[in-house]
Image 1 (cartoon, rainbow, N blue to C red):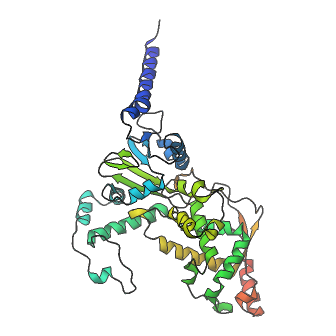
Image 2: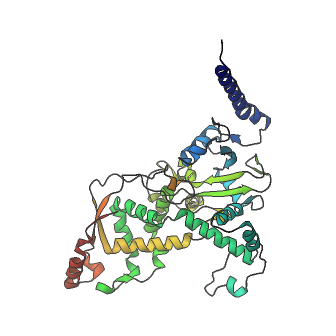
Image 3: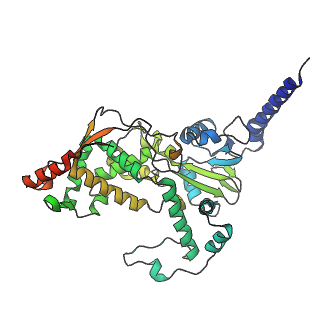
Length: 405
C-alpha cells in the first residue's frame, strides 16, 4: 500500500514540475515581450542566495543563458521581487535618459527611513517647496548645484543620495590598497609616475612638499597616473545603478512592468572583452594610455566605477583628487619593497558580503594580504642634498619598520 507520505511527496513533485513548466516554458511563449526569467528552483526565494553570494557570476550566467550575451534585458527573482538586469550599453543609456519611467528616489527614501526618519518626516522634507537663493546656486568659483527644479527639496534629496553612497561604499581604504598593490607589482609604473608628477613638487629637506595639487589630477600632465587610476577602478569596483520602474516602459524591445526593479551591473561592462579587448580581467593600464579618438571614447563610455545617470556618485571627483594626491605623495617620498612572493597579485573577493554590488571597491580575499618594507626615498634629487638631514630623518624613522599593506 502506498503511504500518505509518498502520495504527498509525489503531489508536491508534480506541482513543482507544473510550476516550472508554466513559469519558464509556457508563460514566456504567451508573453514574448517580457524579459526572460533565469530559471530557479525554489518559488519566491528564487536567486536570493546567489544574488547575495556572487552577484557578478549570477548576472554573467543569466546574460549567457537567457540574455543572449547582453543583447536582451533579462530578469531574476529574489524573495518575491522581480529584478530586471540590463547589460547592453544601448539599453543602459535608455534607462539613464528616461527619468520619467525610472526613479532612484525610492531607494533613497528607504535608506533615510532605515536611519530613523519617519514617513511623515520624509513627506514634509521632500515636499518643502521654496526655491534656493541664487547666491547658493551660483558659487564664485563657477560651481553650480545640479538641482533640476532648484528647490530645497531637490537639494535635500541630493544630500541624502550623497550620504547613501558614502555609507554604502566607504571605499577609500580599499582603493588605496589596490592602487599601491598594482604599482608595487609593476614598479616601472612608479618610475613613470614619479617623472610625471615631479613638476608639482617643490622645496628641499623638511620643506619638500606637493604644491600644485591640480597638476596631479589632470590626465594631460599625468597620463600614466590617470591610466593606473582608471584601470584599477575598472578591475576592483563592483558598482551598480538601481532604479524602480514607475510606469510600464519598453527597453530593448522588452516590457518592464511598473513596480519592478532594475539593476545595471557595471562590472559586467568592465570585464567585457568586446569593449576592453582580450585579457579584460588583467591589469593593463596601457589600454587607456594607448587608446585614441573613438577608441578612447568607447572605453570611457563604458567605464562606470561610480555608477551612472542621475544616481552617479556625487563625490567621485573629490575621491579621485584626494586619492591621487595621497598616492603620489606616498610613492614620491618613499620606496616600497614587497617582502616575499612579488608575483602573485591579491584577488578581489566577489563573494564577501561587504563586496556585493553597489559597495564600491571590493575587498581582498582572505589570506592574500602581503608585507612590504617602506623606506624613505634615498633619491637626493627629490629630497635635497643635505646628508645630515637625510641621516637624521632615516634614524628617526628607523626605516619605518616592516609594515603590513
